[in-house]
Image (cartoon, rainbow, N blue to C red; front, side):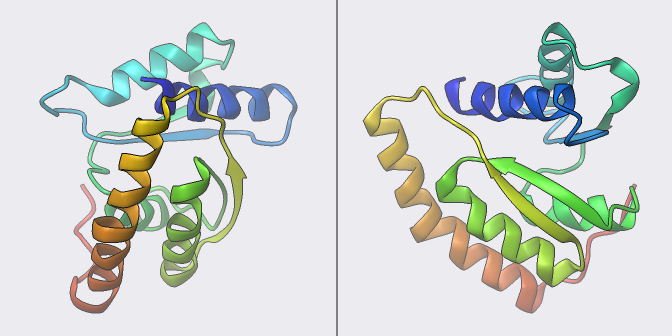
Length: 144
């Protein structure tokens, strides 16, 4: 997927440049599309990221859960968040609300315009309102 490839390529470049030490890959390890974590880990290794610098979280099924788990399970206090522009402000706002000092790194996307438009609409109509509700109503998830 071009969007995910852009994020992972940017992450690998940050590691290679010495701007990041460790990568937390977070997603659904048992999703309908397969093991996202294994696929991301393999992709990063193929781009030169040492395996011992990749930390896997197969229970980060949404951005909120990923960020809470980053803080509570993995002890992350400072982070670089790598994602596309349309997703970056929500991710950084959630990090701040959870207590992670985060900076954003915009990843490129060799995506079709329709894909970008769909994702932007999804962000505005679904993801941002969900993030507000998550912060207001959800207890922090138990970390596994």
